[in-house]
Length: 426
Ligand code: HEC
Image (cartoon, rainbow, N blue to C red; front, side, top):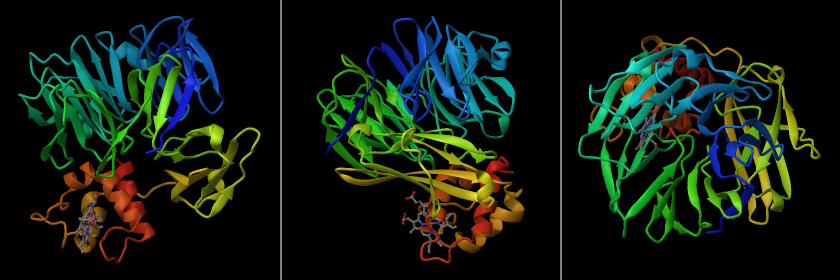
């Protein structure tokens, strides 16, 4: 398999991915934010960083020397969360609607403007945490617990007292992958089923990103990439594994600096995050994987082509010209290997208020229940099952892979499902 290897920053000593184009790095003077669409780095502060997350397309929460700060592209100021945290934060993961913070071995959850301490067990000592793209978080405290922060109160979804992960990650389908220092690779499905894969040798690390379907495995002598049910052995540069970005690309610190390895030529974009609600015009910036060998970049929303300023590599996206509802920003790049498409879903306008009882349950009854009932291999007959699998459900119904054989959901019905999700699954 041919890989794309890009060198992003040559003098980084540590790095952390914030978005598909933004990277937190440490260099000679301190902490920088690198923006790949501008191929430039902005100096933040002469400290160290320990973590960071993108809150939206323009705001990043970064943890600088135990202080939670917000960077808005111009100014760095203390986050309101800093005053709420009773202990110094050591790590922060998640996304705008569900943030998980760790400090002094304790876990905190932030949703809808309020922060609460999570008491999982009196003796719990949280050492590692990874978020899902939804409301879940897996923690080692010290053994594995899967938590669900839906509805504002955190509940224990699952636990495995005998399982001590050395590394773990969620993928974008909601699967939790764990390596435990043996040759087993353990995997938890979104419906709670556990499975195990046996590798030929010790699995040293499993890396992924809750926004991407890609999983990267490091064993004693090889690197494997997993996507769509297939494992492939790949050759990656030698270096320290840093993480995986939202487009599923592996980040490494090598003697050449911060490098990124990708199996496909996806396109990073600034100005918008996936699934965002777009209320005003934005300038989009594009950063294709392997930019040196790109021969063309075209961008559409639906069937409308956006004018890409080829000198700047930017385009204007104005929601005024779009019908309210769901849209796909589609970026197509050509290279010697052919055309690669990267899709980014977003919404404009007001979505309808929808509730399970009045709107979604009837859709489920009419379109899904005969194949996804109680006894089905993939049961989807309750509000909880829909909520936990909402990304997969939306992917399937938007692409018209489901309901199998049709008739498919109307645009109004799709908006109701989106509105139910946007309104917090009432
Ligand atoms: C006629 C039967 C049938 C109907 C109706 C149906 N499904 Fe399915 N669905 C299947 C089968 C069979 C599979 C598993 C095989 C596959 O993925 O094609 C499946 C798989 C799925 C999956 C998992 C796909 C994956 O690979 O992750 C989702 C999600 C799903 N269905 C959602 C829905 C929703 C939502 C509806 C109603 C809007 C629906 N289905 C209606 C038969 C059906």
